[in-house]
Length: 98
Image (cartoon, rainbow, N blue to C red; front, side):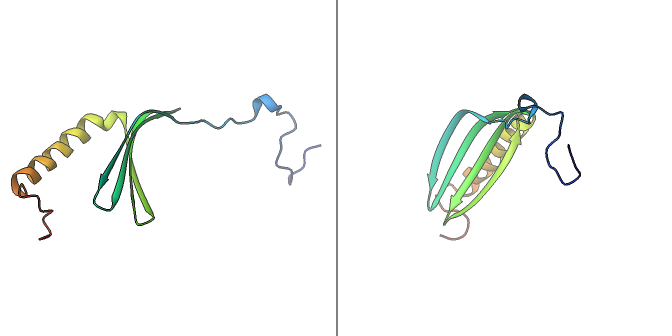
């Protein structure tokens, strides 16, 4: 008999248990920049395709997720920012004086 403290449902069979969805990686690239490792992954899960950009530096991890619906705008904006950097910092410096 199912009681309030019981975390299983009496009518739920094994085949009805929630299944873990596994993300599928379609393409991945790794970029090493100074002391950072940046991974760019094109992945897919039950919600759709997305881009995961992750950074690892000094044992710390940060990442952003961009859904496929934002790819075109993200690419356009990234290219705009990189174009400004190419024009203003073409001497190879990162803008911080180093």
